[in-house]
Amino acid sequence: MAKKEKKEPPKPSTAWQGTYGDMITLMLCFFVMLYDPTEVDMTQLSQIQTSLSVQQESMESPNGGETLSAGKLANLGNMISSLPSVEKGKSLSLAKRKAVSLFAPEVNSAKITISSDERGVVISLASDAFFEQGSAEIDIEETRDILLKLAKFFQDSELKNRRFRIEGHTDNNPVESDVFPSNWELSAARAANVLHYLADFGVDENAFSIAGYADTRPMFSNETKEGQAYNRRVDIVILDEGHF
Image (cartoon, rainbow, N blue to C red; front, side, top):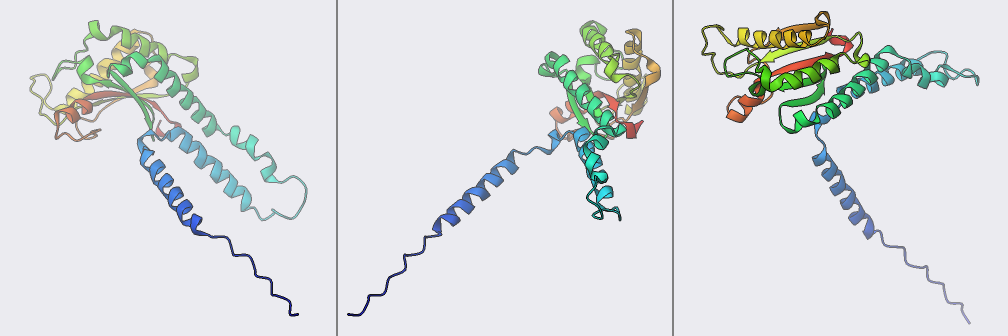
């Protein structure tokens, strides 16, 4: 009697792979939509770039791969952690976290915003909360407590040997004042007056510089009233080492 040939079991279906691939793609799209580039911490990004540069230099060494003894990469972690730029970056990151915590009430009331960019950590003072329209005189009765907190913050030991810059900004509306010929003078005067009060409250004014940018560096479009309100501001920048 002839033996019956054994039938091979059917191959498992791969149809599930299409569904799985679609799900992964949708999840990727979801997280890309959640990503906000304005929240990138430029200080941490600088640390990553420094780390990659050190790794590349070590890997390009002609002596690599010739011995089983510990090479240049063996102590890479310690090398990176001890780099001056990394230490500065850590200090800025700590300063930003401390500022966010210290000025939480002012941030919630939209009198202050805190961010970071290539310049360093930026503490923005809403101009409307500090100054009358077209004036560089600070409303000290309303802002004394904020300025005192700022002065105390800038005297913190963690910010020792740091440099700061106070930058005045305006919207694009012409100045209607006999005191200031244009927004250039107004923005510079506001920055200078903020520095004068901080110095009166104890900061070392030699660690500061001032600048007036008028309406040349808007945060938002000046086409709307809301955008103009955000653009009228004074930025106090804890400068990154490369922007001293």
